[in-house]
Amino acid sequence: MKRFGICIFVLVTFGGVSWLLLNALAAGAAENKPANQPAAEATEADKALAARVERAIAAAEGTPGQEAANVMRSGWVKNLLPVLKGETQGNLALARREFSGAVGGAEKGPTWPRPKPVHAPRAAAPPRIDGVLDDPAWATAATFTGMHPFNETTKVDSPKTVWKVMWDEKHLYFGFECADADILAPRMKRDDHVYFHDCVEMFILPEWRSKAYWEIVISPSGMLFDGLHSKMDQEFGCVSRPFEDVKGLRFQCRVDGTVGDSTDTDKGYCVEVAVPFDQLPGYTRGNKPAAGQVLHFMLVRLDKNGEKMIPYAFQPLLNWGHNIWNHAELRLVDKAKAESAERAVIHYVCVKCQHEFEKKLHEFAASDLETGIRMPAAGGPAVLLDCPSCKATQSCWPAMQCPKCKKWFISQQDVAFMRYCAAQQPIPEAVWRIRSKCPHCGTSSPAPPANLPAKGG
Image (tube, rainbow, N blue to C red; front, side):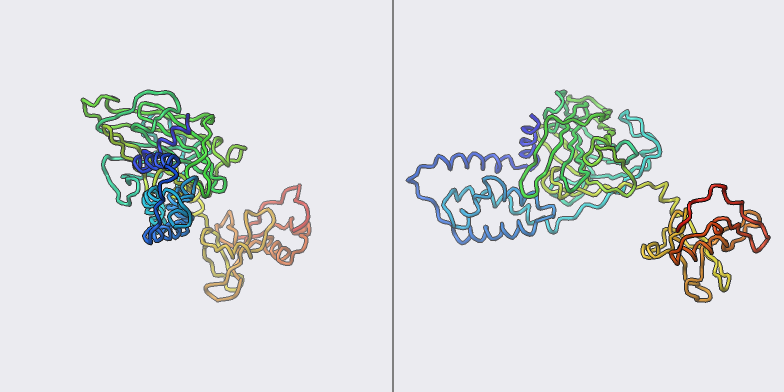
């Protein structure tokens, strides 16, 4: 049943009930065409269209236009291209109509604006899923306002829509605030055609290589459609698994108005969603989300007004939400850790001129860290720097601060460690027992532990 629903949704969101449905009927009619009826010959214009189609398919590869390109190289449609080129006999009228309707979408792909990466912050505390985005965590979530009608790059601000996303170690969180003067969302069974009415949609693609993704559709009346789909590189549509549900999915909706009553004026609705990470492809075997990981996703709102349905996305979107080549990157970030790293500094002292300076940890180049001396039991490599004062090469060493006089100096133990590590020699036990002494006030460092680490670099 889910797959049937998805096929119908193709017709609605492409706004192409006429051309897709008529093409299917025309294909059937072509099979019943009398054998003695002469076939039309391909014209030069037909051959030019065929060449245009082939160029568009090649150029659309890997761009948002690939979804439209896949329409033209899938199933029975691809068999119409030789007809258009004049190489075989067939339903030329159908070939013209099919490729004329699809080639434009593929041609848009190379120049279509790529979605901007979304940096989703880690929630300081899990929000209460009650359909109201008033928890403090939502104030720091990645937030977008306005929306883009499908197949348009122009942003519109009405009806007002706010989109939010954040994460923690267990869930991806989504929040939607949608102004709507006439909320139409009848009650129905789970996985029924929720997308025929007012609703919001989340497409979540964690692993690009597998191309497996969840589609989650929620209406303001609390109706749910969820399906696990798999995309093929050069085939249109997707393979749906109707028996799959997002286990542990939590959501709540709040409506300001009356659902299904067009005689009054509603204000809108809010949807709050918590999607368990352990249900997402790539996370089902216990691996945990972490800052720095990158997923792909798209957020959609379907707004029904009477018999008219208008689909919107939070960023410009070609075709529909299943167009994974138009999905945005969702980068997990931890602002608290990033800010801590931003503040972290290393204090340096030059062994030649005693010049002191600080360098922020995040300012080190990757090459510095790769060539730094690996120190035992340290959080990272020790990087020796050139002195900005006396210009001596690699004369500036990481320093330690005296707990008593608060002045900086180079630890005698660190000097010994670096010498042995730089020479890739085993570290003698005596080095581990060195107690560094502050040259400014004479204070010694604490005694080493009784159970010293094993010898070695």
